[in-house]
Length: 98
Image 1 (cartoon, rainbow, N blue to C red):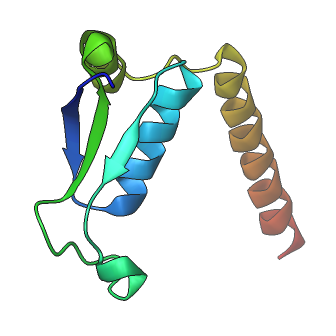
Image 2: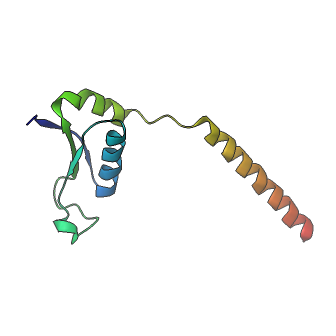
Image 3: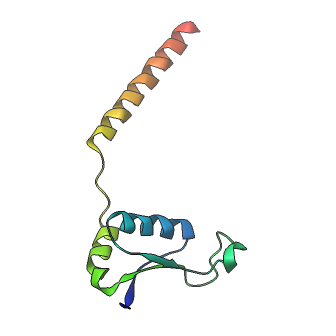
């Protein structure tokens, strides 16, 4: 069995699960380990945080993925602009009605 190494520690289980899922989406095997008393104290860290482990061979790429934010969609900026312009149009209509 290959050895695993810790690549990150998060204070919340949710953050750790999201980061691990990001690693998995990029083809890595990732395991989250932490203690929340079996869910009895969900959201409360009883130990040293929630740790993400990957196989030692994948350590460098996992750290690189976690330190580099994922690329954003170019279309996302256009949607924000469209939403802003529609907000402006709504406020102009509201002012005219009063």
